[in-house]
Image 1 (cartoon, rainbow, N blue to C red):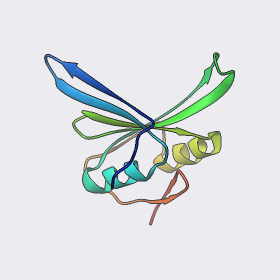
Image 2: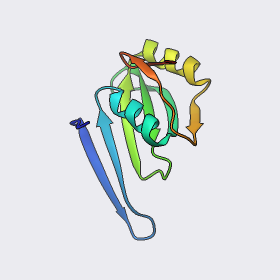
Image 3: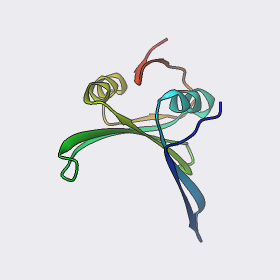
Image 4: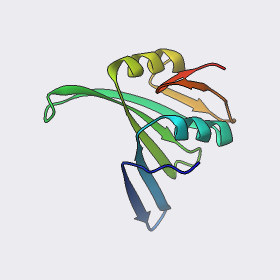
Length: 108
């Protein structure tokens, strides 16, 4: 699957090498990455004073933590995924397959 990120940051460090952060518009790249190699899901929600609103994000990290996909979610998507993953962080050491309805993860 090819996808066009909203924006991308490439980091280069002497000790750890390269890492990439990509903002994505939909959860499909996260779903495919989890199915291919597992990874780490971290959910965040906080009030942004500059935007005067609550913002929520799903952050996916590859098992090596070199690639990060960031997905902005609605509050209802955040609450659903928080309940689905059982907390703000979920680690999948093995590949795992989920279904998607919008940006809400579901069991197949």
